[in-house]
Length: 186
Image (tube, rainbow, N blue to C red; front, side):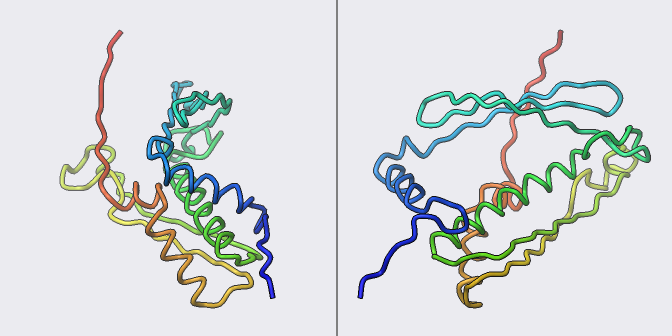
């Protein structure tokens, strides 16, 4: 009896993913990817971020996307777009979503659905500088993933554990990351 390997699982080309993994295993320099976003103020609390390219294997790869941000009226905005916290959670969810789908695909687990809810609470007293003892950010965020498919509970636990171990945005949000700020005036 021969086992036939599906080339696409959950819409992902598993063979191409495997080739990419092998390339990075064989040449560590192929594992570096650099992303850059430029944001501009658009008045009041609005901003627009532009994605123009990213770098992979030493090559610049063009991309053209705009991402709007604004605040709701209660936070002095015009409610024209998600606010930065919603965009942060959206980026977090999108990244871990890729992890759940890719891991399930590599394991051959066909998914029916994946949904992720993420939430956190901020205290505006920190952001507004009213109380220096209050952090301007989250003490914690919580997320719940609801996943359905043709896998066993043990397989879904293994998928979840792999996401916690390998997701870039889970890592970036769950652990301190060094941020180097530079101010240019004029």
